[in-house]
Length: 374
Image 1: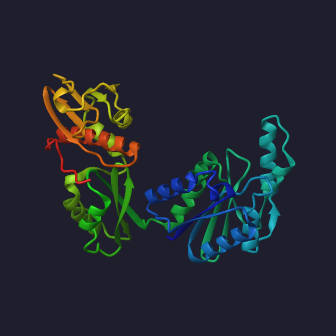
Image 2: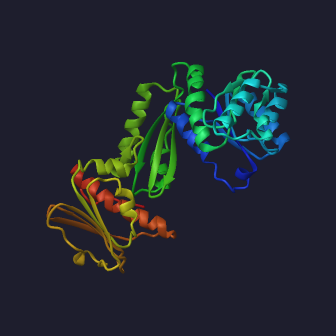
Image 3: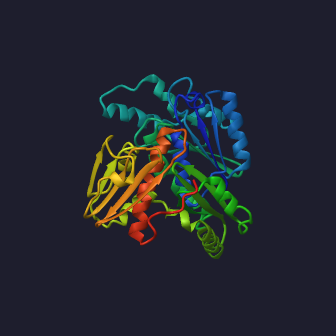
């Protein structure tokens, strides 16, 4: 099923507002097995809106349009849809009554401008908005169905879940077009992974995607109508190459997967150069003790030692780099790492995950000091 997303509004085009709706929607659809083909952004211009709507409808089965359904003069999406598909704006009395009743329930008169939100393309199907005054609607044009929603995030998300996902599932039937499997690596660069993984083609219908999410690289094995056998074979091939750097898989963040290995055991953090980045990764752990100090040593030999329990320490940067130490029930294992990165926040994230990866390796019975080529 081919899907495109259209986000509308001058505030998005100009960068005054970040388009989180489209990112959230793309991820949600992919979880359902549908990969969005294109995401488009257009300002509050009637001619541009009409053109984009017609172009998307001409090449896809589903178009999801977000924004521009408010009561003001620059909210032009309903008018653009009406003109683009020759369905003149028509008053929908039932929705006008709904808006009026909602204002009355709050003890407020309805502004006259809100009546505009009940003028919709003739013949469209209304999508209820239980928390706002702008309803959504569906317009059909040839092979395409266009779903329109307001852009207010909490209204938009509720409508997508309740009003749009069910008909999309019915449209797609029982078949899932796309399957996604996620894997996370640490300590190897995106280019090095590409050299390892892209030399030979993947089976028909399967592709490998990359996403840099400092300090990790996410690998996405995406199957478009691929068989389970082919997906499993591709996964085995992928894991055979990336296993030395694999730190997690699936939809749960790798840090949370590592903390789950503790099975409730207490963990102590001592942070210097990482500036709290390790605490950020571990804050969800129920038995956590964390301290930050600018006075931690810059070499392994002088870092504090814990005789019992689990303790991760990130010292200060010295001439040789930053010392990282894991104390595990009286055993001390450490390394000094040099991080060459121009962005201070990224450096802190790399140090924090390097320490957390030491813990992961210990809990899994692997060599605590891994091979990091990044």
